[in-house]
Amino acid sequence: MLLRTSVHPSLANALLAGLLTCLAGLGAMLALAVPADAGVRTFRPGVVNGTVPDAAELGSMRNIGAGSVRIVFSWDVIETRPRVGSSCGTAIYNFSRHDTLVSEAGRRGVSILPVLMDSTRATGQPSTRYPAPGTRAFGDFQCFVRAVVDRYGRGGSFGRDITEWQVWNEPNLPLYNPGGNVSPTKYGQLVKATSQSIRSQDSRATVVLAGLPEETKRGMNSNAFLRKLYSVNKIRSKFDVVALHPYAENARGTKGALIRLREQLRKLGDRRRPVWVTEIGYATDGQKGYFLVTGEKGQATKLEETMRMLRKNRDRFKLGTVHWFNFRDIASYSQNTNNWADYAGLFRKDGTPKPSCVKYKRFTGAGTSCSRIPPDQPAPLDAGSTVLSHPDAQLVPSEPE
View 1 (cartoon, rainbow, N blue to C red):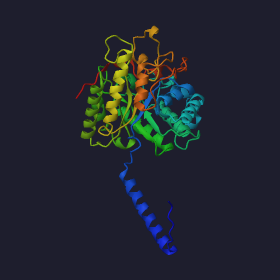
View 2: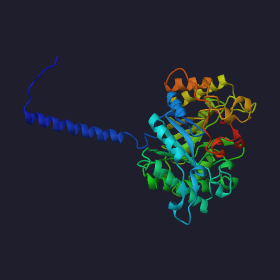
View 3: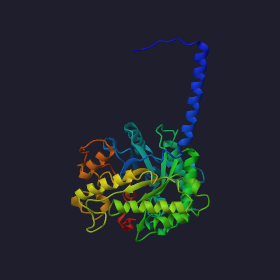
View 4: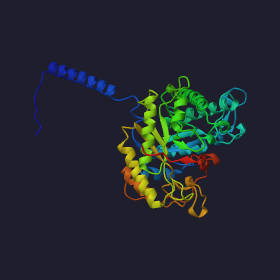
C-alpha cells in the first residue's frame, strides 16, 4: 500500500540537503577504504595463448570463463622497419593482425595482457633476449613500446583500451637475457625505461614485471633475483605488480612458492605489493618422468586443486590475475615433440576439449561442459611466441612450505 503525506517545501529541502551531505561523506569514506591497487588485486582467471587467437578462440575463452588472455605482442613481428636516425616517428609498424585481435577481444569482454618482447632480427641475437641497455636496439624497443601503447593503451588511437602491460618474460633464465647472462640490474634498467615509455602514453597504466619461475637449474632463484632487482635505484615506483610462475608438482608446491615470495617482499619492505600468477599449468604429454607431465585425468585433478588453492588464499597472497598455461596444445600427440609446453592446453591441437577444460569451466562458474573449437590454429606470432616456457629452462619444481 502506498502511503501519501505532505511535507513543507523548506523542510523537504533541508532534509534533502542533509541526505546529500551524508551520502557525500559516506562516498568519501568508501573511497578511502578501497585501496588504490584494488583493481590489480581482483582475482581473475585467465589463459595464456602462444598464437594470435581468432574470433572463435576468443569466444571460447570467454565461454569457459577466462577473463584475460596473456599473449606476446612481438616487436619482431609488428616492426617492419626500424627508426632512421634518432626519431621514433621514422619507424614503421604493421598493426593489422593485432587490430583484429584487440577488436575481437573487446567485443567478447576478454581483456588482454600483452607481453612486450621478442627482439627483432636486426639486433643479431635470439628473439627471446631483450636488447642490452645502452645499445641502439634498446632505444628501438622503447620506440616500439610507445607506438603500441599509443595505439592500444587507454585513450589510444585504436579506440579499444588495454590498461596492463608485462615487461618481457622470465628474466631469471639465461634464455631471456642479452648474451645469455642473467642480470637483475640490466632487467631493472629495461623495466625503468619501458615503464617510462608506457606511462608517457598512459599515465595510469598497470605495469607488470616479467613472470619468474621460482627454481631452475640454469638460472637464478626468483627471490634472489627480486632481492637484487629491488636494489636498482627507484625501481619500486616503476611497476605495479610482481609476477610469478610457480610451477610445481602439485598445489602444495605452488602454495609454498607464494609463501616464500610474500616473505621475500616483506623483507624488502614491499608487503602490500600485488602478485599475479602469469603462468601456471601441467601437461598431458612430453618428456617421460618430467614433474609437469601427467595424464589428462591428472592434469584435470591438479588444475582443480591448484586453482581452488589460489582462490582460497587470494587475500593472503594478494593475488590478482591467474593465467593458465596454456589454452590450446601447440602440437598433436602424434607429433610427439617431447616438450611438455606443447601439451599443457585445455584443448588438444585438433580443438577437442580435455577433461581439464571442464574443470576450468566449472571453477570459473561458466558451466559444466566444453565445446570443441575449430581445429585450425592461427599462425604463430613467430618462433619466440611459443617459448614462453622453454624446455631449455630446466625448471625445478617449487617445494611445499
